[in-house]
Length: 236
Image (spheres, rainbow, N blue to C red):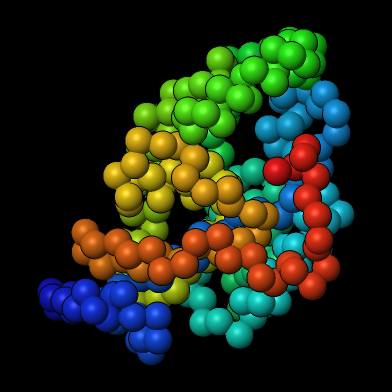
């Protein structure tokens, strides 16, 4: 069995490297904006489709990455992530590879799924929850959240498996803001669950070789700037 090339750290960190021999470059991409409306039932919100703006964002990220050399496109099974992945993959004659492990954290998993948040809380109570989340930057501040440690472990394992399967290639991973933050939190050994506000279809670039991981860019959304000048509070 041939031994895998040992990549120098200086090459792993070099944004101008011409070959991915011995390494994998991950493009972690948040899905386009989803279609939400006021007091949407939680079960419906979990797998909401792309909004009109979200579809435009997905087209833009697909066009931006069209000249890139992509070996594979992975995605979460949720519609907004799959449809974003499809816009990327079609430029490379690829089909999105769906990984259930890449699904977003369910912040309201243990709440009644047929109810909207305003059916469960007053506006003042809901505002206090969001203030607590903002203050702590932890998903556990949500009263009905799924197990955060299990979520992080799931994401880290899934992304590391993608790396192992794609040494020598650049791959796109269409996923979610919570997923990207979970992996960044792992890389930076942070206690926070929310490190950065990840914009829709933004690109976060991670290089990986053996056990080493390098973040090259985070939250690059320059491809939407020509047509987007605001953001809905519902769809942040």
